Each structure stands twice: as structure tokens, then as C-alpha cells.
Amino acid sequence: MATYSGVNYTNFVAVNLRGSTNFRFAVDAAAGTFRADLGEGLDRAYVFPNKSGTFPISGTFTVNLPAIASTDFARTSVTVSGIRIEDGLVVTVQGDSLKNAGAIQHPAVLIAAKAGNGSIGLTFSSPSGTTTAYQDIICAYTAVR
Image 1 (tube, helix red, strand yellow):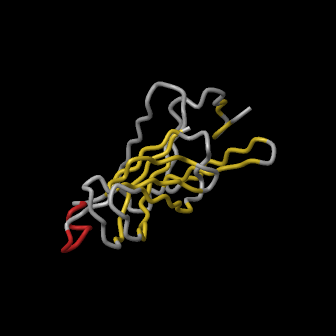
Image 2 (cartoon, one colour; image 1 turned 60 degrees about the vertical axis):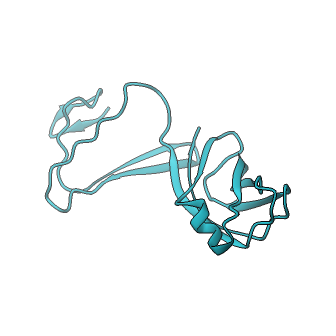
């Protein structure tokens, strides 16, 4: 039973926590921490949706993509910790793909992304019918369970 200052808080309604706070959740051997840092002294409000689910993980990565022959495909994978094969995944190319292609102006187009355990598999294409140039492509991802 949770108590704070002699009051029983079984439902944790209207508990006023001050300063930086850590919430530690543990189930068997698995554990996680949610941290609310109020060290700046500013009020914060966190509103969570009234539904079950999990928080998504998001981030960016860079793909060093070699040249793709005309009407061909290039497959590669990137390591992303926390990704699992059962995750729903969205990957987008950041920026202008024509700028990414440089002076040749034949962009590689992302046509598929598949979550794996600790990695994301990517498939790129050259739909323009001409060979693409070597490119560094920055992608953004969001994965949910």
C-alpha cells in the first residue's frame, strides 16, 4: 500500500511530487525508469492519451548507399537498438532527395522498410531508369509496439 505523509494513495490521484522525480517500474527481471526533471523550476504538464499502449521510439540514422544501377534495387540494414521484429515502423527520408543525389540528380527512392530485432532493413530503388550516385541519406524512424 502506498502512503505519503501518512495518507494512503492506492489510486495515486492528486499526488503532488516536487523537484526531479524518478518512477521505477519492475516486473520480474525487467525494469524501466520514467524521469521527470523539474530542475529548471518551470511548471510542466504531461497529458497521456486515455488508452492503452506503449510509447514509440523515434530517431534518425544515416545510410551510406552505394550507386544503384538503372531500374535495380539496393538492400541494406542499419542497427537501431530497441527495434523488434513485431514493431510497427515508419521510415522517411529527411530533406530533398534530389539534393541528396548531388549533381547527378538521380535520387535513390526508399520503397520498403522492415523492422528486425535490433535493426531496420531498407530497400531502395532507382526508378528513373538511370544509375544513381553514391549517397549519404538521412532517414527518420518511429516504431511502436
